[in-house]
Amino acid sequence: MDYPSMTSRRILATSLMLLTVLLIGFLAGLSLSAIIVKPVTITEKVTSVQTIQITYATTVSRTETTTITKGVSGVKYARLFDITVSDDYKIVKDALERTFILVPRNKSPPPGIDGIVIYVPVERVIAMSATHIALLERLKEYKPNILGSVVGIMWGGQYEWYFEDVKEALQEGRIKDVGSPESPNYEEILTLNPDIVFVYAFPGMETLSKLDELGIKYAVINEYLENDYLGRFEWIKFMAAFYDMDAEADVIFRRAELAIKTVAKKVADNEPPSVAWFSIYKGTVYAAGGESYVARALRQLNAKYIFSEVKETSSFLTTIEELLGHAEEIDIIVYPGILNSISDLLSEAPGMSETKAVRLGRVYTYAPTIYQLGFYDVEGWYLDLASILHPEDFPDHELRYFVKISE
Image: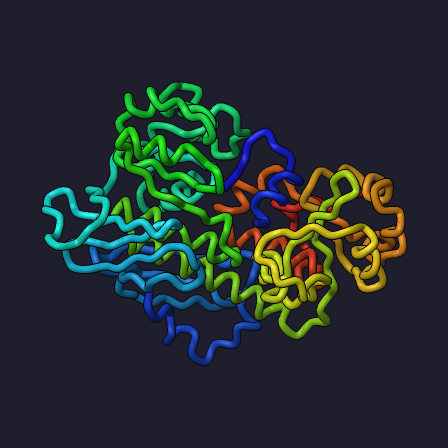
């Protein structure tokens, strides 16, 4: 979920709330520490309907090629959706545990199964969030015209778009802005006649009941509630199911997973730095919980999180005094709100001047691209973070989704 024209601070307070065996033979005997991390070079060739040939650059002078059978590996990291595949249909459960029966357009729904019937691949889609669009953009790799199925986006004209094709489609009217998620233009949505509306949900949201009333089919994608960043990205499998692209999504996901594990392996033996991840608003500290996707990513990349003991999967509120109680151990600060300079941080919390992070200038904030491109490019997000935590291993890396703050 991504909000347009809204500070990262508010986002933090809101949302910090084919391969069954991939390249086993390839990885056997390969020392992951020797793999080139930047970039992980991959070429693919579809050799038949059921196979894909993948070539990886594994070291400076070596490549490996393997032919894999396309398949569906199931849900591995995400907690809030499920997919069951049979020969003639799929059963999908969304974030509200609503059941969908996804049926090929030339087939009839199976008897005796209750659920919302959707004929796939879908041809007319409305998306509520830019993160939904980001996942579709990633699927373009195997279906270049997939954005042609998007007929509407909520808040479409209000976002600062970093996907040029989406920006152009909105400007040219090929994609309609159908209003805000809280108060969409229902008449426009009915006119667009979508096969499915991809939405997110939060407590007190009235939009879903209105869609029910109007008989508009929708699926709830609450990727923002997942407490694992790969779990958030894994929702690409959910969206792909509606396009009958399960195997393709699985390839994309496994590739991303492999790249992230490779980065994590590279930094596994380093001395772990200690990280504070927070923003401050009107004297209140909004910090990532110890079981959040932030804390999990830090652990994956061999870093210590100062609030690891806080059993929250999103953000939690604390005080500046509590934050300063960890001052001596803070090597790095990541500030997901608006922060223009270290001086601005010190105006909110002068005691942070005593931290090693401030003294050595290791203070970072989010780049504007992070909520769209940083979700689309999940591997790049991890690589950025790894280079912040362990810069000695990535001396030539340039940050894309984070920004280093100056004095």
